[in-house]
Length: 183
Image 1 (spheres, rainbow, N blue to C red):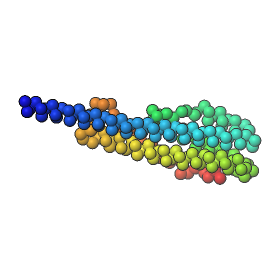
Image 2 (spheres, rainbow, N blue to C red):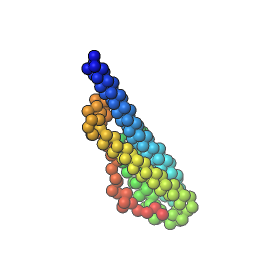
Image 3 (cartoon, one colour):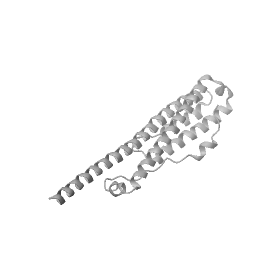
Image 4 (tube, one colour):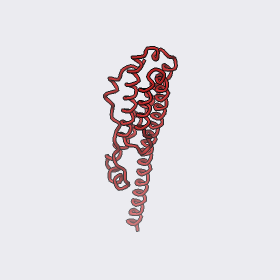
């Protein structure tokens, strides 16, 4: 009888531990999804600010501006909670390419650079870039926590059985350091 009670107690403790571990892993996974969603929202806002910036260039380089707008619209995709880090990098590449082309137009037309609306749009683009950078840090921190948890014993024993797999990090974009100043 006493052995049966010990067995039942151990079984209950094991079940409670599995449930607590599953809840903790789900919470970490949802934090990652939330961080990726935030990146998507901020990239979308950054695209909107970039589109406004492109509209300003129409008056100076109409053909080139229209080409850039069409290129951006065709290459833009929505980042969601389930997006992969590679998709974020593709979107950041599209933005970087457009900013580089806008910088070339602004160099040819100094009056565009002096325009107050141009400065406002550039400030908005820069502001969203800072928010994306912060969200990338939060995402990578959340990924670290989940990856660490599912690799540690004893959680690693049940993480795989519950379907939790290591998540990929958002890598740094090397070209951003070499981007020209837009101001």
